[in-house]
Image 1 (cartoon, rainbow, N blue to C red):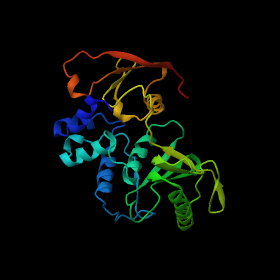
Image 2 (cartoon, rainbow, N blue to C red):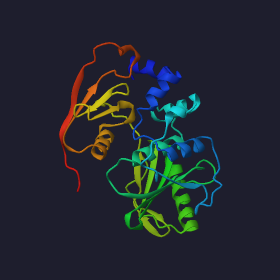
Image 3 (cartoon, helix red, strand yellow):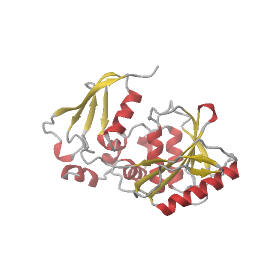
Image 4 (tube, rainbow, N blue to C red):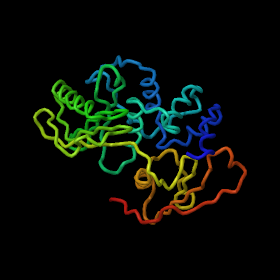
Length: 280
């Protein structure tokens, strides 16, 4: 982390927080913001959902939440979760993984249910329904070690037996992971062999952009903040989903979000160029 970006992180004035929160992509919908802050506050679910603690989320994808109405402490929470990433507990990893789900091109999601009580009543964090009634179950961690990996398998079995769910895939999402996790070996989930998948938040050692950089796609077609992405692969996934594809050029404007760069000349440099063929 360079000095300019450190100073940006230290500036937690309401004006700066609002400026940065507006740059979070994908943008939160009205209902997502509501559920997010209820989850942060530890609000219990009193509705008649089929599975206690879980609520449907993302159905209002055509709305945009109004972050201008948020209080300073709410802006600071979002800042710590998605920009500075200075908090990495189970709750935070769950919401960053949910954000990631909104633009990956790997599969078509029909429905997502998110556990709003993941630290107390339920161990499973996300239930993802795909086409043809296929199910993905997700468990989130701060640090995934062998002990809680094995515990997760036990909890998965308890969950699928209790709710009569037959998952096709199981994902362990974590901020950090130990190397001894047997992720290439099938696990037994209710007498069905499933090879678990591991999603780990990590920073590339030679990342082509920093958190204080502005990322420009095709000469201003898209302007994105560097702090939204943890790797170039993550960035390319987003561009694939939200651009028209074809010939794509990615530029970075270094230090755009840094205090010390205001008013100065900022160089724009090409960091990636290629062709994206959109699936029909």
